[in-house]
Amino acid sequence: MFRWALIPLFLLLFLILGSLIALICQLSYEQLREVIFDPEFHFAIGMSLSTALMSLCLAIFLGVPAAWAMARISFKGRRFVDALLDLPLVTPPLVIGIGLLLLLGNQGPFTSIFPQLARSLFSPLGIIIAQTYVASAIIMRNSLSAFKAVDPAYIQTAQNLGLTPTKTFLLIEIPLCWPALMSGSIVAFSRALGEFGATLMLAGATRLKTETLPMAIYLNIASGDFSLAIGCALVLIAIAITLLFALHRLQRERKS
Image (tube, rainbow, N blue to C red; front, side, top):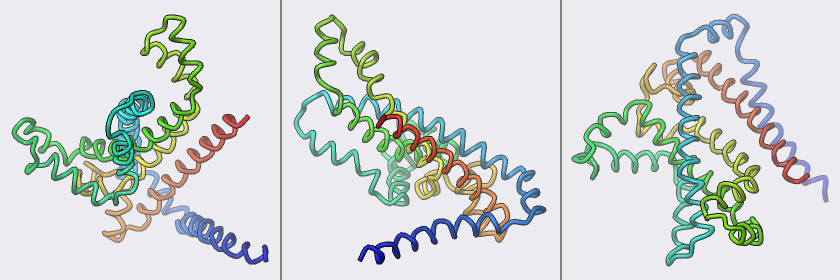
């Protein structure tokens, strides 16, 4: 019976490894050389890394305090809020993009208050907003689980020693939750780096302006330049593998 269970395993491995090998073997040396020295390729890498890093910082700034509040403060409707904060994880990216565009765009309620915001969406700012939206939910969920796992005795001891809630948060809870926070940050950064649907709707797809690596793949596949699209895909795969190894190493350290 157990041998039949190996068939789905081999099928999944075939799809994963097969797609990787197909991408790697697609480009010749000359094509790869052209891609490496292409200014559009450099722009897409720089735009992706810079916006993803800024989005990660914003997601940490928003997600970690929000998770602490959910873990430590009791209020009515907390279960509803807890479920609502997971909505970005299950909502289709295109739907997220449309919602953000209607909220922050020219027809949104904030146009009269912040008119410059609507005009700035089709820029790196729009990319950062879209990436932060999806990354903050990951940060919040990982952080919430970590804060809930902290032994209340540590917090009580810190309070008995005279530490304020802020100092307890910074000096006790953050160090205890650090591995989980780092794991969440790795996943959130990877998610922000690969964000496409919400970014497409909110910031648009403009070459050398809002062109992240996923956007470069989309634009070049549409125009028939498969070499540059595959080159961008290989960069994303390389970053994903690096982040995956880092995540697994953190998880092993947490278990040990």
